Amino acid sequence: MHAVPDLPVPPDSSCQKAHESLMKAFDPSRAFWAWVDAPFGPVFVAKTGKGVCRVSFRRSEDEFLSELERRSLLPEKAPEKLDRERRELGEYFQGKRRRFDLPVDLRWGTEFQKSVLKAARRIPFGECCCYADVAKRVGRPNAQRAVGNALGQNPVAIVIPCHRVVASGGGIGGYTGGLDIKKTLMEIEGIEREEAR
Amino acid sequence: MPKRVHFSELLESHEKEIYRFAYRMTGNPEDASDLLQDTFLRAFKAFPRLPESANHRAWLYRIAHRQALNLFRSRRVRRTEPLDEARALHDSNGHPESLEETRRLARALGHVIRALPLRQRSALLLKKYEGLSYADVAAILGSTEENARAHVYQAMKKIRDGLRPKE
Image (cartoon, rainbow over all chains, first blue to last red; front, side, top):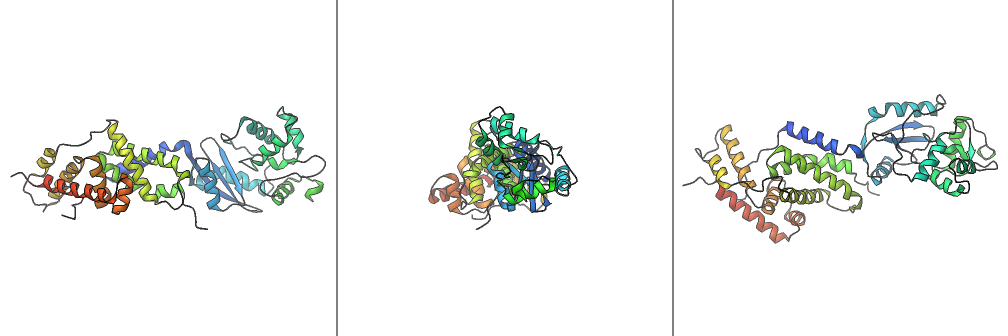
């Protein structure tokens, strides 16, 4: 006897129910993502139930998804669930938006990183401040280098405007996404720095 | 550079078959749903450490098999079903000519399969119903290929005996 008779397959209704339960179990790890056009190419954006958790550029879709997986997130392409994020970012790139009203999910950072990013978020559109100013604002006036590192690991670039933090003395400082992108963002906001020209 | 396989793709490609396996292992949708969740949540945690070259399908079945053993050990699920129940279901006129008879046979077979020891049950489902190779079945069970063949052989023999009408 080599062949076996057919076995019943699970009914569609139970498959659907099991799928829904599975997705619910994954809820804390789910990240919906989409992309939006920017002057420098596509910007990928992902959000969890808590808020925007990743803004990425100069990455392929494959690299972006790997970034999310490294954070133990389950990516799910769902542009319809990121209408607000896509609209606000799109308006910003067109120079029509000065601030983002988006919640962010910074759960992966250390307390220090979070405090630096929160301080950076308070820098108004079109203005900039230097690393030393941010260090003072987070109560660590001598931690300029650590501030630079924390900003360099900003998971939600643009939404948290780390590009508004510049070097003292006229330089534009560094930018993980590439200095040309920092310059473009500064141009969008009309920020003038000697080095940005 | 080859494209990396993402977990969401594994989920999309294999969720249905893992659920089918779980359903046939446990015999009811609630336990199958639990087993599906246990499998994919565990797989999700382990996925970042999985080598790119891994056989993702066999890997998921290995987790499902182990989770099934845990589920049965935790006594949440009845381990096996008495063979007599299967015989009672099967003992009618013996020939699966009508749709009802086909269903009766399938139910009887389901009962016989759930009366099998867990490793034989897994081996049979994986080889005969999910179409995995003996090498994969062996890897999933953590045994030799010879041992996997023996499990399938024993399971088939018990099915043959279990479905034979009482004389």
